[in-house]
Length: 408
Image (cartoon, rainbow, N blue to C red; front, top):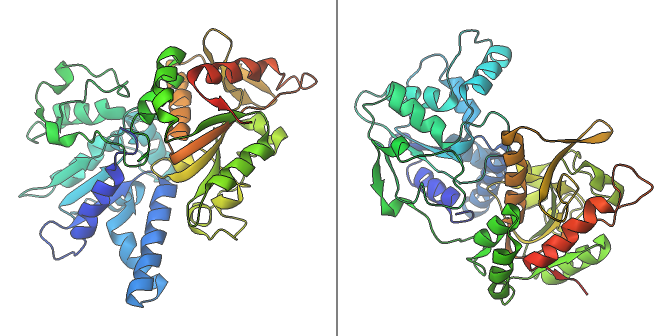
């Protein structure tokens, strides 16, 4: 489930076996650029402080066992055998499908004959080892948020069609979780060994609210009755608030954060009309400054000025979150509607994948806080055709029905 510690599991393995002379030499890979950047920098700062070496030297070390998956892929294009025997792919369901990977490799890497998905190519790279190799695919269900992501089926298809000699193991829960929406079937896993130990069932991120992921699932799915039932227990330890006043929302978050606890402003990457409220999702985002700078740095998350989107925070977390909710995922009083702001107007999302990406974007945003969150819903303005009040009022009422309490 979200926040169960997938990234921590991968980092522990990579850090334990970060010596190139280790027979189980490992590398932690992720296509999530902000996550890689923040992890590399945070660990470099920590190592420099503990050992006395320069931060630049520490950064060189951390960048060896934590890499962007695209760098690893590009290094392997020449056919060289990777030095690592263990490759850990974080958020593996986000690896590119063959269409997206081929388009990128042909246009950006001058590889006109490239015609593989990222899972197929990455398995092929590790398959070059003659004796043994291990791939650990860390899967977060319901986390696909961008076009061209292969999902879990991309890995299984590559294994079944091109690498049947590999032994494959997975969680017994893979077909049962609320977040698996990959069109997975029992047949897909017919040749896979299932182990109960491969499922991370307890949320570490929401240490006060193990039921948060289920609550968010029902909110996104349009089931206020079930969400409201879960909210009763959540409120005892995990505040869930909502307001139409952004200034009050910011003050509430600042009042909650104690000592070194973190707080940040989040919004959907397509929450374009939040700009009218002072939330600009198209700002230039610096993940290391936002996540790692001290409280008195205006670039840091603590200032609640620069906003982070689902692409900036996926795989990372904060103690307290303020989530701006725009009209891209709006409730009409009966069900959710899926919209995209393009140019000067809203357009409905017609493709099922586009709808799923939007839902997952809000799922990511609503599962970043460890201790509590508040949602800001704009009032809207009937004099502005891009954000009339009706675009927001039903969503505000719906979220109250789900159990979010109005901030006094």
